Structure formats: structure tokens, C-alpha cells
Image (cartoon, rainbow over all chains, first blue to last red; front, side):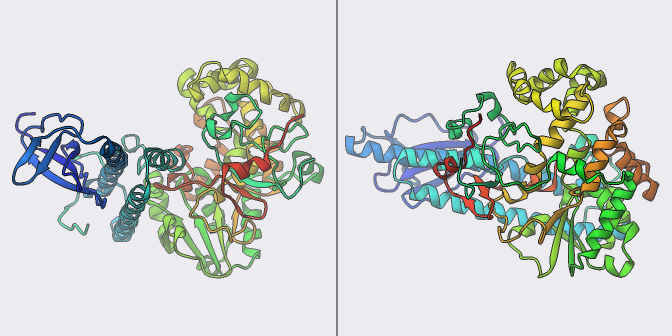
Length: 200
Length: 353
């Protein structure tokens, strides 16, 4: 896309230096803290090229480079690491959408559009600020825990099992099920009070 | 006969593949159809459940004096005050049922007793009913519902929820049907309309017929003839989902299982009087259109608040359903122990005749 910047997250196996995966994003943060993987974020105006199966290395000084195929005994290990990154990326995408929904819910224009009387507005504001804090902490704690469980997985079935357990047993949906359009909440009316007080 | 120690209090839906050992039609594994606990002679449940609610026959045999909706609300509010709890935590979703609850308390409890009330809510409770929040809820201490996950309540507290209000009135699946076919679907012959609505609700053609045929025998035990889709869906909800809804608060992994129904938590609508009202006042639950659904409850609120917005309240999700990143347990036993594995769950399977 001309004019936009793209974040390229490059996941590299620490042992071999081989690139496992490159994840492109306009918006979301796909940083990870897995022990066996280095993550480089390169912001460019165009996407990184597609890479062949584990045949590239990445180094901040030398950049992306082609190398030979990995050894047979290395391939399985690389596949497992890549699967870990893929699964974590999937969850990060979901959490990113939840965070966007949270931001939308709690942005000043949305709060101002909720018809609360001036004498109660501060009470309402404080309540919302606390709720935002609670849920964002919950998201961070949840992802850290899930990342640890993926870190501990030793093969692809274990990685997939952890992921499947999550998506089939946990509510990962939208943050705010209120039909905001129906209620006219958060609609830009041009009649909002001042948004100068931002405590978030 | 299955050992009586193997009884569940609550079961939460798993993937169809997870519960292949169930012998019911596969179509029942969609949504909640295999989580029913029948309060009739005709049994529909897939697991052995502890009897956690009155049967319909038990309610009818009490032969309670028929109270109005308003009288039921006031009576219940007074009963709850008589429990003499130090703290009452009222779950407010902003919807009709929880708003009714707070109105009942405001109209019956002395001012000093109202000081023992804290309202549990989230941001969307306010969005759903901002005028009621602004005028009435703000007078109470507020606590985010999510804090129950990690912050214990003081001793001698009671959480009060608005569950079971839907079961008294009808079913939100009907609203779904009305959005597609208009209000006339409510009054169509239930034998024709129910499978249609179920197909649309599950988004699987053909499922409706199988689910309907499975549950059809329940109509034999209704005290009056089931004619319309509205009749059937109410009877289904009232007799088959009551116990599941009553105990589903234990489903979340974050819920402290030392908190018991009755002592630590109650539902406002869980009384024989409300259930008698539901059996005796079928004609009052709705007018001709879906918009008039739960009109007695809306009128009750409006009479107190004089706020026309309360007449426009719609059926919304329960507060706990709005949790994000919440995980459900597989099931909970009658002794409030979690069932830890699907293998363990097999001990609780009920084999139908």
C-alpha cells in the first residue's frame, strides 16, 4: 500500500539463525518472548519478500539472506517453533481486536455520548477507568500465561492441543456486546463535551 | 441404576467431538439442547443431575394463591431482606430482569437496609439502561462484576442475580424468529413454526425437526394445550432450562466453588410464587407483538420510574455472559466439585430408556 508503513515481525531461531516466519502487520503488535526465538520488528513501506521454508537467516546488520536447507534433524525442531509462533500470533490477533473494542468502548467521545447527568459523570468516568484497568490487566496476564504454556509444549500436537483447548473453551469474543449503533452511543455527533481530561 | 454419587449440578457444552459418548441425536449437541434438565415426568437430560429445582408437579401441588407480578416482586424483596445479610450484592445488567429487581428493593426496603446494597455491574449495564443507572443505581456503591473473580466477598454476603426471569416469560429464540418472519411466527402452529425457528437459530437446516421431535413429548404435561410457537418455547424454557440456568453461575473457572446457591447466591425469580405466576398468567406475558414481550415487568418498572425508556428495554445477555477471556469448567458435581476431565464426565452419563 503506498504511503502506509508495514511492521514486519521476523521470528528467528536463536540456535541456527534461520527465519521461522515473517508476520506483517499494519497495526497489531506481534512481539513474543519465547526463549528459543528472537523477534525483530522492521518497519518498512513495503512488505518483506516471501521466504522459502527455513532457507533464510536474518541479522540486523546483514539483513535477510539465503542459505542452504536445514539438516533433517533440525527440521522438526524448526517446525515446532514455527507452529508456536503461528498459534501465538492467532491469539494475539484476537486480543488485538478485543483491545480495539476496549479502546472504542472507552474513548472519550463514546463516554461523553452516554447520557449521564453532570453530577454523576465523574462517578461513571471513574468506574469506567477502573474497568478498563481490570480488563487490560486480565488480557496481559492471560497472554503471558498462554505464552508460557506454548513455551512448555514439546511437539506440534501439544501446541495445537493448547490452542484448541483455548478457542473451544474460552470466551474470546468482542469486549462490548452492546449494540452501540442501536443506542447511538459513540457516534460522532459533534456535540461532545471537552475531551481535555484524559486519564487513560 | 447409576450410583447416586454421580450427579451433576451443572454441565457446560463442549465440542460435539468431545462428547461422542452421548447417545442422543447429534443435533442436540448444538447450543444448549443437550444441557436440559427436565422438571417433568418425561426426562430429556443426557447426564444424571442432582435434583436442584422443584418439579412442575411440585409447584402445582402447592396450590399457592395467585399473586400479581407486582405482588411476587414485593414478596420476594421482603423475603430477601428477612435473610438478614450484612451485605447484598445486586447484579445489574441493565436489562428488564435486573432492573425489576432493583425497583422491587427500592420500593420495599427501608432506607437503612438499602445501605447494605452494593450494585455489581459493568460498563455495558450503563449503556443498556443509562437513565436508570443515572437516577437510581448511582445511589449505591458500585463494584465491577469482574472483580468477583479475584476479590472475595465479606462474610454474610448474598449475591442476587436476575436469572430465571426469561424462563418465566418465554424464550429469546422467539425474538430471533420474529426478526426473520415477523410477529406472526409467534402465533403459528407450534408444530410447524418450532422446527423453522430452530433451523434459523442453529443455522443448520434439518436440525430443527430432530430437536423438536426429541422434545415434543413435553407438551403432554403442560396444564393447558400448547398451540402456538410462543406457547411451546415458553414451556420448553420453563421446564427444560430452569435448572441449568439456575446453576450455570458455577460454570466459570474463576467462580469460587465454596460459594453455594442459597447461602451465597440466589436468583430473584427463583420462588414458587413466580413460577405459579408463570403457570397461571400465560396470557399476560406478551401482547400480539414481540415488542410487548415481558410487558408486566416493563410496566412494573415504568410505574415506579415514570421513564418511558424503560418500556423500550429489550432482552439482553446476562451479566456474566459478557465476560471476556472467561473459561468454563467441564461440569460441576452436586457437591460443588469440578469435573476435571471428559473421561471423568463419562461417569455421569445417563442412559435413556
